Amino acid sequence: MKKLKVMTLALCAGIVMAGCNNLAKGTAIGAGGGAVLGAIIGKIAGNTAVGAAVGTAVGAGTGALIGKHMDKVKAQAEAVKNAQVETITDANGLQGVKVTFNEGILFSTGKYALTAASNATLQQIADVLKQNADVDVAIFGHTDSTGSDAINNPLSVNRAKAVETKLKSLGVTNIKRVEGQGSTNPVADNSTAEGRKQNRRVEVYMYASQAMVQSAEAGTLK
Image 1: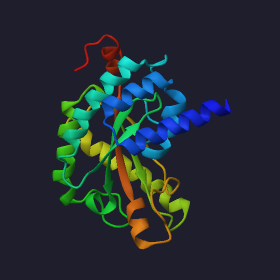
Image 2: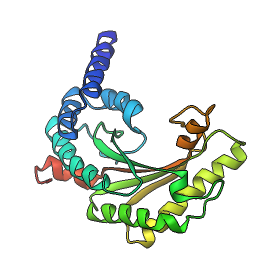
Image 3: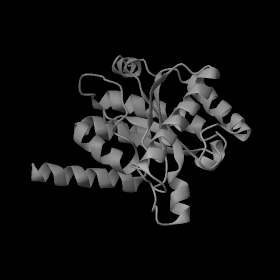
């Protein structure tokens, strides 16, 4: 078991350091067993909490096709104004896309009402989501550690719900999960002003739906 963990960590490090695209990583993850490697990569580059309930292990060929498809989704998301776009690994060890919007892009400080300036950005991400109806979508709200959980937790929930409501009003129908995580999952150091700024964010995840997995298994996913 110890040797397996060492080998898995080594493979994970190789994938991350190589900076390979989703097609290559999807193949490696499928061939490597998915669950263990997916969890490790997820902690580094994504969120293993998201993912459709596919029920069975996903093979290398399926992972490769989904990875190739997600490369296209990522390219579309990268055109969204003010979006930080990353490759992530979901709970099934499959590739997905995370789009992060910092607080100032969508909200006034301490508020959860969307600003008028956010309209263009959310319209663009809505267009991407509508063009990719075969992806499942999750929305997570986050805060910095300033203030109490009694303030931060509902603020993060309300911000995630505000984005959900706006995207649905723009015709997005594939949102599966909306969650506020308060200050529990920082991406930067809360002891600095810059770190706190990065932690105040909303993340939109795009990951393989069960229908996409089935399409990839059938070899029909493009």
